[in-house]
Image (cartoon, rainbow, N blue to C red; front, side, top):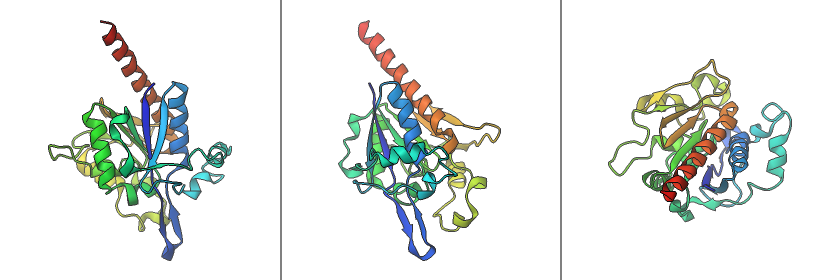
Length: 234
């Protein structure tokens, strides 16, 4: 059983524009389900700890037509998170950064999160992020001083899908910044799209890719466990 740390935005509010955002429900619950199906454990963290703010749009009829994510949210499974500063990164086999516009505000430049990401990566763990979740990976630098995503094939939420009413409220364009550092791909012809930048870095494009993203992460973690078992038997 692998342990995965899911990191959520604590939330962001712009009162002047009546704008509230945070983490995206499908991008936590869909991958977590896939991981748990394979016997892996998911634990939650956020910048502030406690109950992080979910983006209300992610629980709307349009985003959650069957109400499956609303039901999971109402169950309280995302009500308690560990503050990222209190996370022991070496306990985890992977980190999964959940999207939602909130990630661009409080996750992107958080140095405590960058440190956790680096420890997981340097110990050989998997660093994964979906939709707007790659935002902090843009600013995470290795001990050699290079950006973690430098030169790698990556994906994330594309410019042409950003709601026009929020574009001017966002601190940066995720696609533009990913394109400056890595080899950005969107793959418009695919309903869901994820990509491995290398054997340790996985990114997913959007909410529609969340389930596939979870399956890919679960598959890789299971493969790693089997390889470790086989090596131990030698």
